[in-house]
Every structure is written in structure tokens, then in C-alpha cells.
Amino acid sequence: MDLDGKVAIVTGGASGIGEATVTLFHEQGARIVLVDRNAEGAEAAARAIDPEGGRIVAIGADVSSDADAGAAVALAVSRFGRLDILVNNAGFGIRGSVTQTSEADWDALMSVNVKGVFLFSRAAIPVMAGQGGGVIVNTASNAALVAIAERAAYVASKGAVAALTRAMAVDHASENIRVNAVAPGTTWSPYFDEILARHEDPKGFVAGLEARCPMHRTAAPREIAEAILWLASGRSSFATGSVMVVDGGMTAW
Image 1: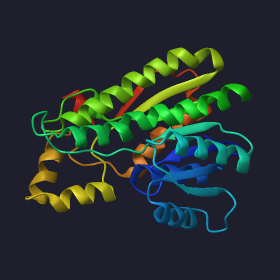
Image 2: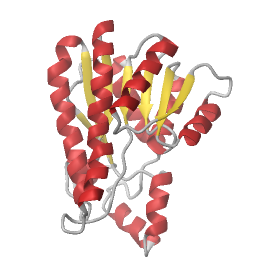
Image 3: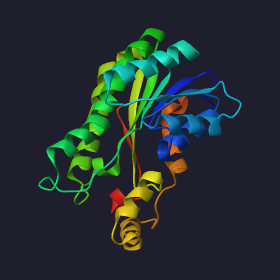
């Protein structure tokens, strides 16, 4: 799945699945624009992954900003000359049912999880179409397929990402742009650590999640990044409009 010569943008690239994806793409020879709202974290991740420099450029950006999306795409083109792959990975979750979720929290989550995919794709697609094609991979969730209690806004946002993935795949197939999504199960990451830190019973919470998975464990970020790599590479050349579930069998039960 060699990405030598390919240019990619990865949002949410400073930690978790995003950082693992940047690392794997770098190993496969890609040049990468690492996007994260934490500019210092983005720079640190870029230096750690590409200590010699030259193949990863970091940019602090808000994925819900049209201007920031345009700037990230422009940076890829100005620095590396093209854009072959967009990984819309940035996202977060909040706890609560519909009645427990404030309008402000709903809007903030949708702005990142859904609007961010829309804005970055809208900025990237004309560049990809102009050069003869490209690939977009969106990070959805198995929550796009099955409900999770007290995560109403998150579930809705990831369902929207899955639906938007299919819509873009249909709209842009004629331009040789493939659009797919990966749907991870629970994945251990710094963000997951933050969730546990706020939980009244972290060990019980993790045990409950593992009990819902036939493999009885959570995923490592690298395991999800491997799926993203396959969808981004030429190995998946006939796949578009698909949502690839990587959740240890949770949605199979």
C-alpha cells in the first residue's frame, strides 16, 4: 500500500487515530499536511514523526472554519504541488440524551464532526478533480450503525458523516474521486483518557465497553489507521460509498 509521491491532509492529526494515520502514511512514503486545532500539538507530532523534516507540515486550524479549510488545502498545494488524499478525522463526543444536551453543545459538536467534513471536502474536491482524481476517507463510528445510550448528538453526527460519505461518493465518482468512511469501535486514545478521567467509575466503564465487544477489548489507534490506509490506497480501487466497520465485532452482536 505504498503512498510514495502521494500528498495527504489528515485532520485531528496530533493525537489518537489521526496521529497513528499520519505515522502510517509517513511510513508508506506520503507527504502530509497535519491539521489540528492544537497548533503546538500539531508541530510536536510532526517533529516526532518526521524528525528530518520536509515531508510533514503542521498547521493549527479549526475544521469548522471555511477559511481554515481553504488554507490547509492551499498549503498542501503550495508546499507539495498536489492533493491526493483527504482524511477527515477530527471529531469529538459529548455525553447526554437529547433532553440533556444544550443547543450550544449540539451546535459545537455538529460544527466539528459534520460541518468540518463538509468544509474540508468542499475545499479539496476541486483540486482533486482538476488533477484527475483523489480519495477522501472520513472517520465515522460504529455509532453511525447502532445507538449508544446517552450519546444522542454524537450518534447523530456520525450517522450524518456516513450519509454524507455515500452522497459525496455518488456525486464525485465521475471525477475519479473515491469517498469512503471507517467506522471504529471504542479506540484507546488521549481523548478516551480524558473521558475516563471525568468518569465516576473508569474501570467499570471500560469493563462495560469490553463486555459489549466479542473480542473483549478496545482498539489501538494503529488498528484503525491500517483500515484508513487501505481505503486511501490503490488497493481499495473499486471501493466508494462504503462504511468500513472496525469495531471488534460489536455491531455483529
